[in-house]
Length: 102
Image (tube, rainbow, N blue to C red):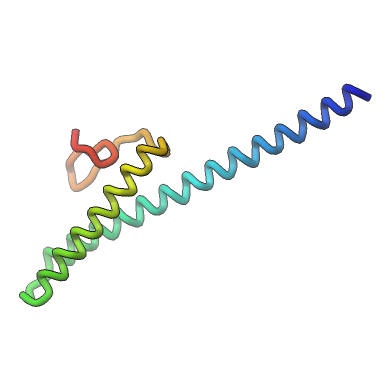
């Protein structure tokens, strides 16, 4: 009887640990998608900035580029703090380790 209870408790704990690992993995995947989205937004803002010819839109392009870059760098720093990522990111041909130039 004790062995049955022990097995039941072990099975429950294993299932809980699997759920926690799954939830942690899902959270990291969601964070990764946010970082990738921010990177795409930054790249699109750069393209927009490079293509603007109307002087009245230059300020808007500068603001959009700056905001997109700040969001991307912020998310990379948060990922580093939370240790979600330990890999090197390449941004515009430069080596960056989570927002810091190397």
